Image 1 (cartoon, rainbow, N blue to C red):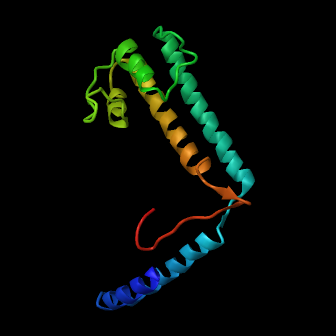
Image 2 (cartoon, rainbow, N blue to C red):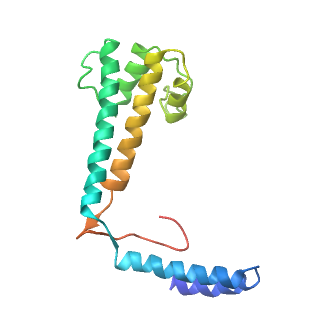
Image 3 (cartoon, rainbow, N blue to C red):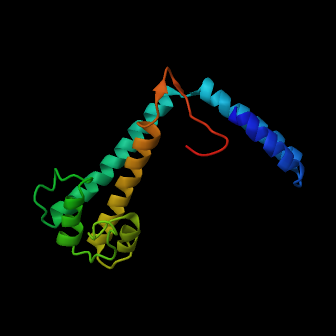
Length: 171
């Protein structure tokens, strides 16, 4: 197996290193924990998990509402239904209605970008609506990412998450 091949090579290499025996022992212990996590899974407390889901959705909703209220204030049509995932609509709000000057462009498309670096620059502008909109969009993206990756994205089966763990790389 891959683990056996790694263990043999690493044991020899670590024996030549200061504190190598201890490092090897820790590696083997971590391998066992990782394999247990893969086979048995990690128990998830449903109430706590649902609490996180509700909390993250609420925070995402508040950031979305804040951005939509700013859109209403600057006269964006359909402000109450505009999609925060739509590049076109965000460009209209930031570069059109709010008057943010583009500072970075996509290497692939040549279109102005609203990535986190740009939004962090907008936070420091003197225009309070621009900085409030950037803050709200950054918060929306943060809570959306946490929710989609760590709550909705985890495959919970029978109250457990079964991870894929490789000691010789990343997944």
